[in-house]
Image 1 (cartoon, one colour):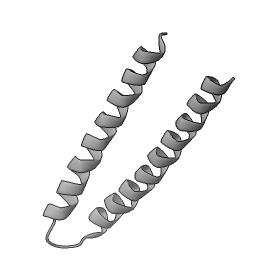
Image 2 (cartoon, rainbow, N blue to C red):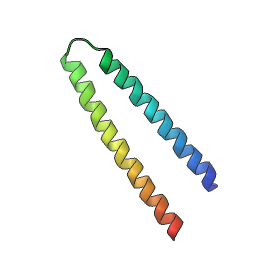
Image 3 (cartoon, rainbow, N blue to C red):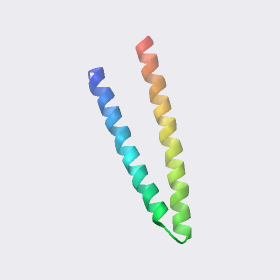
Image 4 (tube, helix red, strand yellow):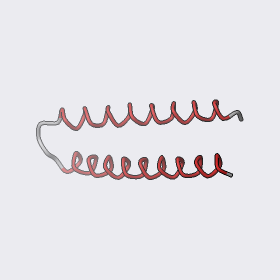
Length: 69
């Protein structure tokens, strides 16, 4: 797969993730009363954010390694 195509696919995936996170954040902000389900959702959201950030960081490392060698 050409590099530009792979880069675009990665950027598209990141954009979809960012849109999903924004929807979750809007939903969480709209909630007026705390309930256990909302708290579980917030915890899951934070966990997902951390995993995505880690995965993106790892992808950056792999791309950098591939470019160097």
